Length: 210
Image 1 (cartoon, one colour):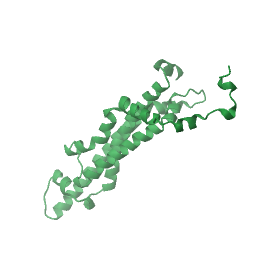
Image 2 (cartoon, one colour; image 1 turned 30 degrees about the vertical axis):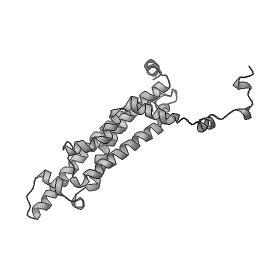
Image 3 (tube, helix red, strand yellow; image 1 turned 180 degrees about the vertical axis):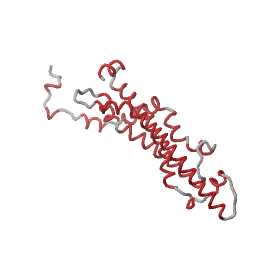
Image 4 (tube, helix red, strand yellow; image 1 turned 90 degrees about the horizontal axis):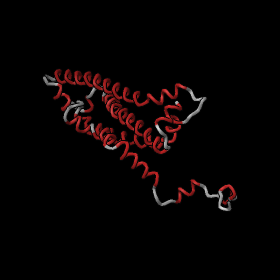
């Protein structure tokens, strides 16, 4: 009984936060690495690295003047989104798993369908990107034709200078949205599985509590 926490003077108790702060072992970083390896693996890397080969092989056509910084921006923002979702894992876990009778049923539905909404956002950005690209390429071809140059769509993509690209900024935003939406959807689904393992929750418990 003399070693019981309940008998320890309040002032003598050690703060859990302070104890963690003094530790030399970066436990939270290791958890992030474990989460990344086990639940994300090549998926997260793919979302950040896919733009370069997809643009190179013309799977998603881009203006050559935008190619380099678009691929760089996608990589940076995809990994920032991944880091932020892991950083917010406690709030996400409470939102998804916390059992509360007063909780709004709409919130549960939103939590369940959020990844699908993010996937839909990615598809919507892809559609907007192609619509803007078509209008921009058509304008570039018209501008070249006015100068007495007949060219193909691919030639316009490769030779139009950045300052002559119509809808340059909206194109960039839509392009980023395609990969950010996909990355966020993948990371949210993965963080749910990760937190379920951390909380030792079985699928049957989650189904019964919903």
